Image 1: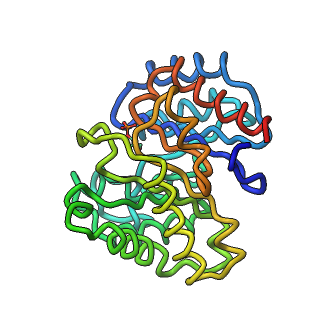
Image 2: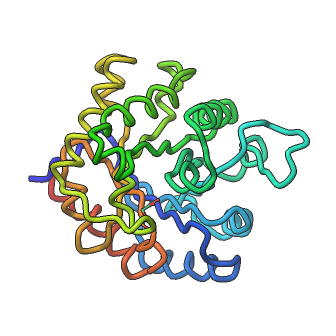
Image 3: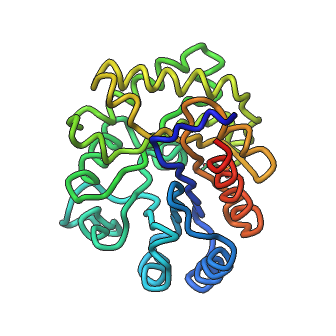
Length: 264
Ligand code: 13P
C-alpha cells in the first residue's frame, strides 16, 4: 500500500526554468492538455518563464492546471528596474516558487531575501512553494540538518499559523539536482529530511500544522523513478525540473501519481 497521505493533495509542479519561449510554452501546454486528465486529489502546477505566464493564463484549463511564477521581487512596487513584484502577479498565479536552489546559488539569495519573498507572497495572496535543501558541501561537512533548520525557520519567521495553510515546502537537496551534477537521492535520505522538516513545523506551529502542511520532493526525478519518491512517507508530490520539459515524461509522472492515489 502506498504511504501517500489521503488528507493532503498530491502536487506535481513543472519548473520549466529558463527554457521555452512563449510559443514553445504554449505548445507544451497543449500537449499536456491532451494527455492530462482532471484529478480531484492531484494539482498540476506549471511554472513557465515570467514572459509566458500571461499568455498561458489565457489558454489553460484552470480545472486541470494552476500557474506558478518561478520567482518575484519582495517589494510591491518602486524603482527596482527589471523586477516583477508579487503584487503584479496577484491576479495571474496561485503559486510562486521561492528560494529555489538556482536563486540561492546563482543569484546570491540569502536567508533573509527568501524570508521577505515569503512574506510578500503571503501578503499578496500567492502560495509560496518554498525550497529548502543542503548543498553537497553542507552534506559532506555534516551540516545538512543545520542548513535545513536555518533555511526553514528563517523563511517562516513572520508566518503565522493561519498563513501556514497557504504555504508549500519542498525538500530540494542540491546534491541531487541535475543542474548541479547531482546524484540520485536515496528514498531513505528523503524520508529522514522530510521527517525533520515536519518536526520543525511541529515545534513552531504544533501537531495539526505538521500533519497538514504539504512537503514535496525537489531533487531530480523522471517518469521511471518518481514512484519511488512519491511513496516515501511524508512526501506529497514533486517539483520536477528537466523532465517536465518532455510532455511524455511529465504526463506519465502525473499518471503515476494518479494511479498511486487510486490504489490506496
Ligand atoms: P532537475 O529535475 O532539473 O534535476 O531539477 C530539479 C529542480 O531543480 C526542480 O526545480
